[in-house]
Each structure stands twice: as structure tokens, then as C-alpha cells.
Length: 412
Image 1 (cartoon, rainbow, N blue to C red):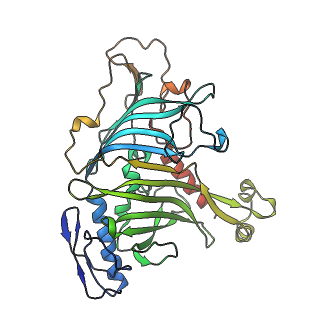
Image 2 (cartoon, rainbow, N blue to C red):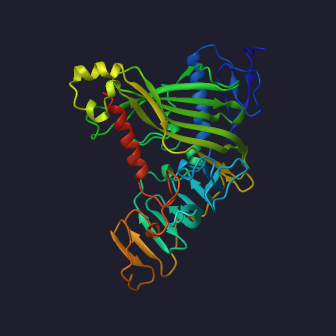
Image 3 (cartoon, one colour):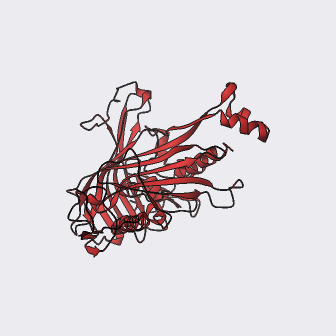
């Protein structure tokens, strides 16, 4: 049954909003606001406004978060290391923490545990950690080691796998932009072969790398968003593709897949389970050439080589599954500001990046114990297992983003 000239009323974040677009499927929840329109431009405008409103309607969040990843090949196919906890699907618990976040201030808190490899490679163990960002300083603390850090962190949301990853925060780095920032008039309504019934697909191009350290100019990216009216117009899926410079090729750079949703106390929809995968650019050069060889070629020769080069992307480490316990979540409820800092216990050794010094809380000598910048000293006896991000943070993720985008530009 095709719907024409019908009004539907939706409530986004508890407030009614009048939107206009033509539904692609007749089945819509009572939580959708739609007026049918005939122009794709009006459809795209209404959809992106609804999606942006849904993202911005989540102003604060508290809940218990578990981050899972599959086993890695280093342990052998199908082998789960001793000491690791797994879920019903055999995915390994990588992080397990209580989480709080405020959108307006950017403040966040984590208290839980993360996985580490044993020094003798006999298996893994978990260590307790605290993390808190007060809008200026990121504080981290390993409880068993009694070591902590106070760091500058321009991308704290990018580092911690949590709800903000599923909402597309810090999806673009140079300049810093969230998914909601990219939902502008440039969005267009498109159709794709992999779109499930009831979803709408918005797409736009944008530039990554708009600053003085990119002499060749920024990299063009394509953003594709699958909007889900059944769940408050939140994104069901988000895909970022990089355009390889000089050839008509796009490769995956990032994929977010929201699998389950739930409503908070005020009716606001939030994703409670999703997957997050980063990708890296790969190139198979012809005639046995290597990447180092291609950098020595004259521009005219390189252009011909590039036409015969196969470009593709592969996952940069295992996919992260982010799971939120809906029985613990509080959405858009006041959070005590004291939550977003850490009172380090007496006797703990702390490295302060702002002052570039280490100190013992409560005074007293450190006793010659080394304190390593950007990484807790406990890693001397317990190196992190699994690829990717760890809760004791630095800005390695930002460095990776720069490196990968630069790599894509080197295809020029």
C-alpha cells in the first residue's frame, strides 16, 4: 500500500516535530513524525533534520557498557586465551565499565576493567581502571598498580568505545566534527541495494584534512547514513568512504552498525548494541611494484601505474561490539559534576602532562620508580592484548586517523 497525502505525527525527544518526506515503507512506529512530500529535496531535508534532532536529543547518559571483540589470530583460529571471559557468541570481553557522559560539556567518566596479556603469554587477566574527563583534563588510573595520569586529550570520545561511538561523535577529525554536524543541506536522498525495508539513505561528500599540514589538499570522503524511523530517526548504519586521489575509486574507512535500540525514561531512543569497524587503505601495485617504488616514479608514469592498481580496504583490527545494559541506563537525567573527575588515593604515583612531572599523592619520594609518559607504568609487566584502543589513553587514535588519511592521499 502506497501512502500519499497522509500526515503522521512523531515525537522526537518528547517534543512533537512536523517533518515531511515520502516513506519508503508503509510500516512506521507511532514515534514518527511525517508529512508526505513529492520532492526528493524536501525528503532529504526532513530526514536529516529528524536524524540530527534525534542525535542531539540525547543530552546525557549513564549506564553499564561492555565492549567485546573476537579472538585474534595470534592465539590461533578459534582459540580463546586462558583467563578471558566470553559472551554466548564466543566474543571476548575487552572492556567492562560503568559510563557517564554529557553532550553539552563533553565530560565523561568510566569505572571498570580492561583486558591485559600475561607477561609469560600464558593467557590474559583483567585490571581495574578509572577514567574521567572534566572538559579540560583527562585523568586515568590503574587501581591495582596505583598509577595514574593527567593528560591533554582533544579526542576523549574517540578513544573510549561507548555510546558516543554509536552516535558518530568525532567521526571527522580535521576539523573536528560529529555526525550531527555533517547532517547539512548537502545531504541527498539515495537508494542502495543493501538497504533494509523501512530505512532511508542519506549521502553527502565532505573534506577531511582542512589544515595547514596537508600540502596536497584535503581528502574527499563520502558519508552515507541509513536513517531508522522506527527508532526515533537515529542512524541504523553509518558508512564513511575515502576517495582515492587520481582514480575513480572509493574504499571503506569506517562502518557503524546499530543493532538494537531502547528508550530512556523520557521516551528518547538510544542504541544499546552496535558494531564499530575502522578500515585501512590497501593497494596491489602492478609489475611487482612496492609503495616505496611508486614514490620514485615520475608523475606521468605514476598516473599510468595507478590505472592498473587495485585499491581496497581491510579492517584495521577486529570489530568492536559495544553493548549497553538497558536495565542500568539513565538518559537525559542530571549527573553530579563530581562524577567527571578522579580523587587519586593517597600514595598513588601520578604523571601530570600539564606540568610535565610525576608526583606521589600526599607527598613523599617516588623512590626511583619510573613513570612513563602517555602510558601507565603497569604496562611494563602487562602489555595490552588485542588491537585497537585501550582505556588508559593517549591520542594514538588521532595519530592513526592522520596517518590513514595521508596514506589515501599518497595514491596521488
